[in-house]
Image 1: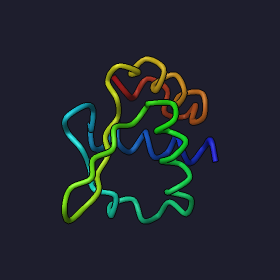
Image 2: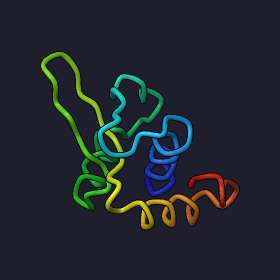
Image 3: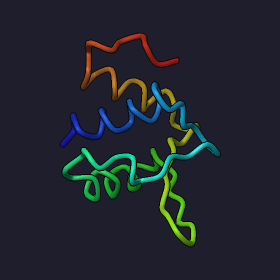
Length: 85
């Protein structure tokens, strides 16, 4: 599950660049089998911000914890070290 968290956050941070007010719809993360569990755990850590709109749900990474998020991603996915800024 830790690796799935890192993969989800890497997708938000690197390819989407979703930090703070820029968020991505949950429907774009269908490939993650444990998406609900991963989101709940990341919300507990306050590493993601969750938005509920009238017709969709979305999330982004919390910029307050940028350093911790990047360190976690790089510890779980060492092959991407240095790619996130």
